[in-house]
Length: 124
Image (cartoon, rainbow, N blue to C red; front, side, top):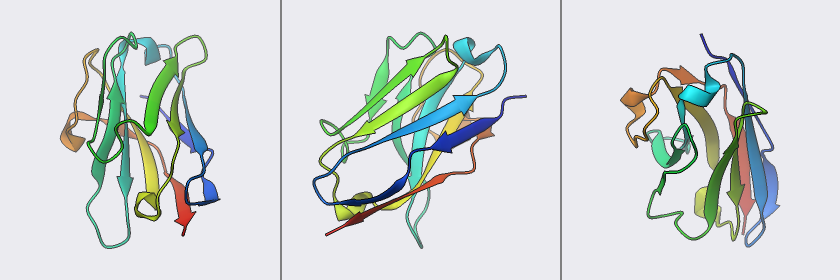
């Protein structure tokens, strides 16, 4: 069982930056690929980015490429999402997710564990 706790959300102006963190419990973290997803009001949860267990492979949604960066620190059981040049359309609840595989996936159904989410609001 893996428990995930996100932090770092908040209110920011367009063009600003935020860094989200996701702290994971359990010694298996280093064997899990991790992902970030987001859900805006009235919309389905969508893929943002994912990172492999080693950190050597990543993938991003087209909408965030060049602005967001995912990273992880396996010694700290933590995955990060650095978000730069934020836009109002980035406003959503951001969820961290873990999957018991080492390789990445952009599918929600590939992830077994989810955090409670953290709100990111970007004002124009």
